[in-house]
Length: 106
Image 1: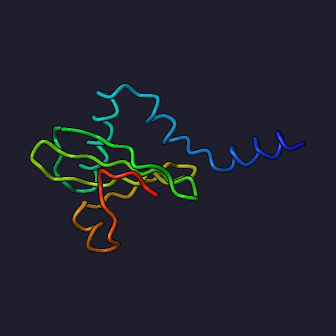
Image 2: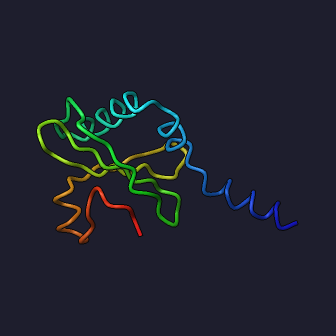
């Protein structure tokens, strides 16, 4: 019985878009994250590095992206059916909530 309950809880918090991102090679993941950043209107032709910060209690995943020109962003991959995203500059994240990019979520 206990095992079935754990399996159900994992299924509820599964994030299919995050699962696809994790399964990609580093090169493909960098390209996918660059597309997400650019689709938000921010410049990021080339990614210098990515960093997986972690997930929140709702199963939303957070990735950090440093672009070759020095701008850095946090990309939230929401735990919803469409895998919707939200992109913020790391500066805005820090100013709004005190959060910091390129550090693991606590």
